[in-house]
Image: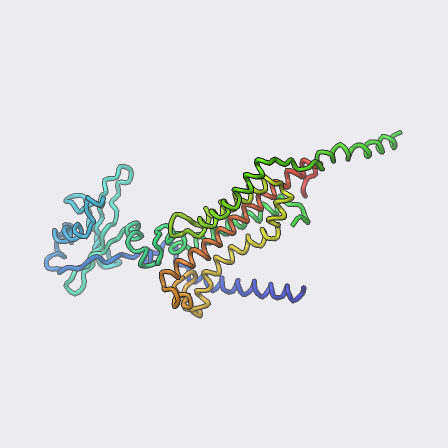
Length: 185
Length: 180
């Protein structure tokens, strides 16, 4: 019995050590650069004369036509870059431009961040910047799971699900402690 | 005189309260037959839902369906027979075993990569990856460790709560004895 308790203590200490070791892997709260929040590169084009246009707040026609040709158009229920429904903001942190689009929602009137443009070596690279679209497009490549909900539940948000399970476990243990008589195991 | 009254009370008291408590569990042939037919199907369906993470399944739903199967059995056959089928020691084991299974899915990533990979980084499980490939490895780990861990914990938690409440009702029906 004594050796069994000792083995149990060693096991618990080992698990606790692994838990403490694991803590440093938890991503920082609201980390915008965590893998799930990065952009997806769409395409890159020559930057001839487009930087000034972007600085002036106008999306060049080529970017508009290329994004629509990639499937981000009205037929697939994506908002397009029409004149007047987008805002271009300079993103100093990432050294690029964010293209925000008014989706025409009634209750959520703020523009949503849709594209991100970066300039490097005379080329402009266009990135996609929307979380649900990212899940739809990248979940199979990143997690290997066909199901986007499962990848969100068990892969991207694995910590959340693990401690949800812990909540259920501790609820059951509390009920046992409150209601059960002694010696009824 | 008082002594005689007390003795009389003691003689009659337990008998009057013991007769409903010792009453046989009322058997109902229809309910028992239906439960006998349905419980295996419910348990099978619960297991199918529990590991079906490629579709709409998942641990929480599957665990709830499994618990519903056990609860149907207990409702039909009584708590005494139900306790033989699902002993409380199993319940207590399953409750923490599911949690350890989920944590183990995260920790084998660390153990196999010797501390190089993150917790819950399923790609680092290289022995399985060498055999079936990276995508299938992640699918297997999510389906058979994470979801089964969640399902087992949820099932044991629900069943143990159900047993606790059922026992409490029985104790109160027996003699109004308050559990300490």
